[in-house]
Image 1 (cartoon, rainbow, N blue to C red):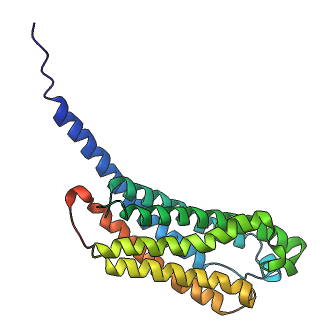
Image 2 (image 1 turned 180 degrees about the horizontal axis):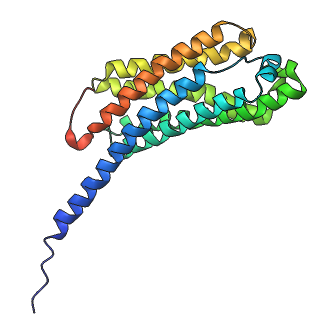
Image 3 (image 1 turned 30 degrees about the vertical axis):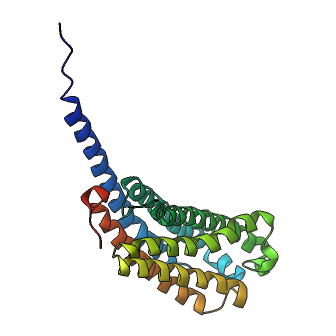
Length: 231
């Protein structure tokens, strides 16, 4: 009896790997197409940010944050799937932008969940403190400040990676959108929760960011095995 022929194993393994990559591509695209618009929808529907206005709208404040959180969770899955595919990763330095964007998205998810759960309760008991520096304790600071820094920075680093491979418009939309959106949030503390430009900046930034993220999801049809630069 001779050694058994194992040559069919290689094609089988290749077919399995190809199937896994195909599922990752489908997941990356589907979650990008869902996550971006959901995040934008929650931002557009966002009600008043001051304590008295928040108390008037009841559960709507929490619902809009739930919608945003769901969108961000889908985006995190999309980014993780594209990272697993090696999308636009041709050198070690390319990983930095993808990891930074993923961490920034997860931190912003935590901020949105915290905001949507904490502030309606605070508005019920002490509306004058909502979205003021007086309401930031150590627990809130651990979530809020890293998110305000890493979300725009992570998308800017990812934009640099994408731009190296010809995805200039996607890079521009993601980075500018994330920065403009975050500036809207910072206005809450610099100018007060009733400042009218907050909603304008957040909706405008979220619109650019969402468009960029959806276009990024479309690029998942190619991975590093399919070579391709540009979107």
